[in-house]
Amino acid sequence: MSLSQKTKNFLSGFLRIALSIGLLTYLFRIIDVQKTLNIIKDANFFYLAWSLAALFILYFLTLLRWHIVIKALGLSIPFKSVARCFSIGAFFNLFLPTSTGGDVVKTIGLFKDTDKKTTVIASVLLDRIFGFVAIVLVASVSFAFGYKLVYDPFLLVAILSLAFFAGIGILFLFHERLYSFACRIFNKLPKIQEKLMKLHYAIVLIKSKHKAIFTVVFISCIVQGILALTFYLTARGLHQEILFWHCLVFVPLVCIAAAFPSLGGLGTRDLGAVFLFSKIGIDAGTAASMSLLNFFFMVIIGLTGALFYVATLHPRWVQCPQQASSADTKES
Image 1 (cartoon, rainbow, N blue to C red):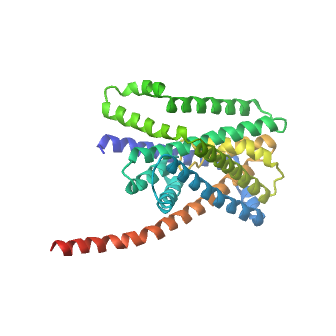
Image 2: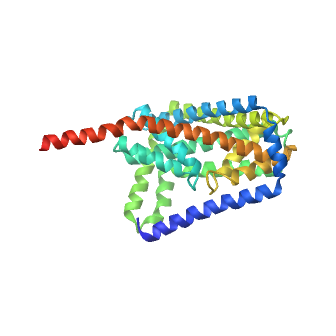
Image 3: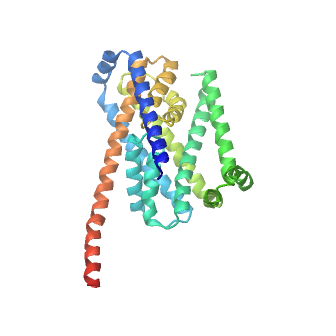
């Protein structure tokens, strides 16, 4: 990696961290911190425990979704390897200064199990795409049926914008002519252009796997429903009387806010939650508590995943020196 590239990466990471710190600083200025701490102190931990349990189910479903995509693309990778890479990716997603940092880590990890590196990258990209499609579907359907409960022009515009960009993005990725046309900007960099076209051909492998596509989209919608449930349970744990339907409309948009450049979504997700849940009368401190508790639960799950990664990696680490020692003995 060149010095200029390292400098760019450092600046990008620094700006993302600075953004999270700045937004969190602003957040704690607009809320009553002492009141917020009292709300958390008086929380009903029965509901919070169920919220954490729901996130563990969500964790397994997202792992299963990626595994199905991998199989649909024709990759023969053991589930244990997929789980290991997914776990370490989920851990790094919490702390790397980018919403896709964990994706890079788990992609590189899976390279060790196959020589089809482009297809591995395609699997991670498709996993993200199906997740985004589910966000749009759940938000759209929930708003369509529940707009009388929480009608707001901003929500309508936000959801329609998400649907538009999702449609455009999928069209470009799966349409060869449009994709190749977009790749013309790399005409002076033929190697990059070639790699991008290989990625396209790997992505379109899933087009004929209708059962896999339906299953993955269905799982993705269930994931969004469970994520909404975790916010609902957290709200109930903080003694807030809200409808589950509200969470089905708001939480997908909170997920989009968390995807903006930041440190693990901190700041962007929390301000998004404050803005959205204020529309149904929840004060800023309580909404921020809901979001931060949700992040705390994800940290617990991320740490659990990291422990699983270490536990499953250790035997391989032990075997490597033994194999190397055996090889040296034979050579001598």
